[in-house]
Amino acid sequence: MEKEFTIRELDRIIEMAWEDRTTFDAIEYQFGIPEKEVIEIMRREMKPSSFRMWRARVQGRRTKHEAKRNFGIDDARFKCSRQKQITHNKISKR
Image 1 (tube, rainbow, N blue to C red):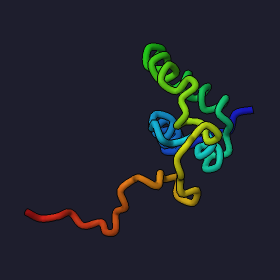
Image 2: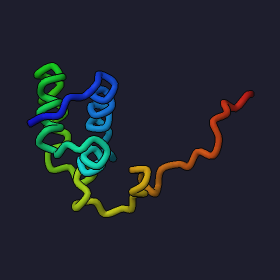
Image 3: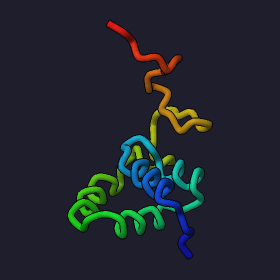
C-alpha cells in the first residue's frame, strides 16, 4: 500500500528521483518507500513522455543504485564525497 505524502514531500521525492546521484536507497531511507513505489509515483505524477524519458535514464544506472556505485557518499547527508563543500550561506558580492 502506498503512503500518503504532502505536495511538498511529493515534489521532493520527484526532485530526488530526477537527480542522477541520489540513489533509490536514499529516497527509501528518507521517505520509507522502495524503488518500486518511487517508480509508481513518477508514473502517476509525470506526463507519459516525461516518465518514459526519466525511466530510460535511470534504468540500470549505477548512480541510482547504492550497490552498483563505485564512489563514496556521506550517508548522513546523501552527498557524494566529490561534491563541493559549502561552508557559508553568503552570496559573494562583486
